[in-house]
Length: 330
Ligand code: DP6
Image (tube, rainbow, N blue to C red):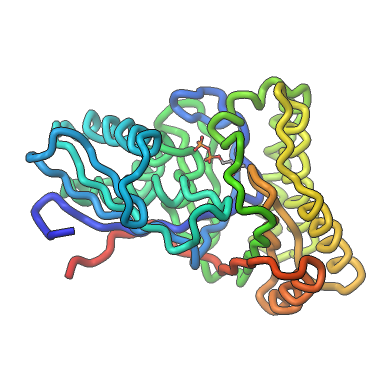
């Protein structure tokens, strides 16, 4: 992208939730039903260039060098409408977004995508926006994007209004060397994405129980991370993932994301932790891929076991990442 006044490039990392966001109490504002906790993933990121250009008569979007489909362009345009209203500009934008992780692996890109888009779009307007407001604005594009703004280990406060629902760091990236090994069980595009899933969450009779007990799990995971207590961390992270999937499976219509291989890996992970004393636990988002969260020193041993169990599957690997940031111009 040519460098003109009104342009900037930003990078944001994907994140993996340890206490999940599932269901909104305000769908339009993406005010979540419960607070959530995640860590940023250093090795999975989106880099987005935004150029506000008075010569354009509509927003344009390219993803990994190709013109994006209309659904993706509209979601970005809606988000840019929000930023145009907030910062009082009527210019359209040229947006070029690139992921460093393979597309179509079922790894969510909306978190890093909307965090990078918001950070670049604000920087290109030459406005100083606080980390908190960047998180609030990113949330409107994709809920989990709020958590990709601050660095390291992050809590997204559910809040009860637009202004009070934002994420902030509670431990820096170098606090605990955790590694996410993502076993790619299926590359198929998910039939029901998270945005549609959030809308049906409240149709499960288990959702109120999951939401009511979330504060307890938030406190327990935070204490475990701060104290680097893997046993306690593992127990709560797995329980939280299981609870979210119980809600998904009992929603109307029911959502089943697990595949037979997902279950085999979950079973393996529990065994490796109990019998082999490896520091590893699992968590799954709205898809069949299994995030195996390991202590740094045990990640290689877990990767070997994953290959023994699954044969030739792709495994993505990432440590704990920094927050969204503007890249220097050259
Ligand atoms: C299962 O943030 O992708 O990954 O706000 O509609 O973009 P939208 O949903 P999204 O939902 C993430 C759901 C999850 C759990 C989590 O990351 O907390």
